[in-house]
Image 1: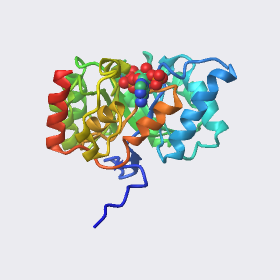
Image 2: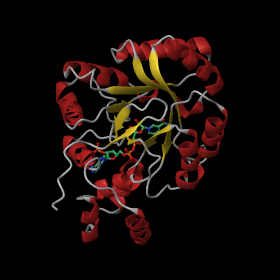
Image 3: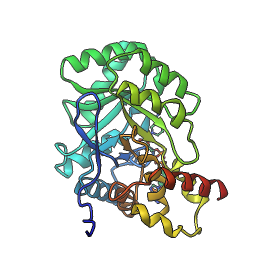
Length: 283
Ligand SMILES: NC(=O)c1ccc[n+]([C@@H]2O[C@H](COP(=O)([O-])OP(=O)(O)OC[C@H]3O[C@@H](n4cnc5c(N)ncnc54)[C@H](OP(=O)(O)O)[C@@H]3O)[C@@H](O)[C@H]2O)c1
């Protein structure tokens, strides 16, 4: 029987609610930290248009990312896409009152009374902010609570917090073909505890693609509907069942289209993943 091409983007349930989240999203650091110049903003608007047109939703930002929250807020509003977007941002400051003020500012910049996901950025003052986030969630000002980091060093602390603190819906961490420690340290705990996982730096800030530039893509990757190196890197991460969503950043609409394709079709199976790791180690 012929296999029908998959026409909707893959999604995974957020464990705490069952809400489905498309597996490819968008990071805004550093690419959305731009001014008002229309020529600079036009490709970013097109990046977002393609994201939503493909059925994807997640846009991740932070007050740490300069003007990114304000640019994302402007462009999502200009596209009339707020209801389709899943807006994630962060609190990145010390102190309860300062944290509340920063989150209010983020909501205003993102033009959203309700933020879908508020994350504690790099675990800064996390005990203080976790108490505030529980309160904000109770009041309906945020829909989900998350914690984030990006280094391998932080994985143990993230894992410990997830194992001991209830009410955290999301963890965001670094994980890529060249940084695989999360596979054995964090992801098994997350799977057992039922927490959604957002993967940042899935392309190693673009360095992984620079490493393989000009090298031919093996033919066997077509077995899991992969047509580019970026898709290979993203599909490798997405094949991990505990991963909910990847958020590669891009300012280039063609790269957005490339990345979105990782959310369609088959994913690598265990044998494919073994071959990908072996291939990677030879590159
Ligand atoms: N602690 C935290 O919470 C934390 C830490 C780090 C990152 N993050 C989040 O994670 C997001 C992603 O991380 P990241 O931006 O550091 O790294 P990344 O997504 O791994 O890499 C982004 C880089 O890859 C390039 N790229 C993207 N798609 C491409 C494609 N298809 N082909 C060729 N090049 C491509 C982009 O350049 P082009 O613009 O030219 O496409 C950009 O330079 C951030 O934007 C941020 O939202 C969070």
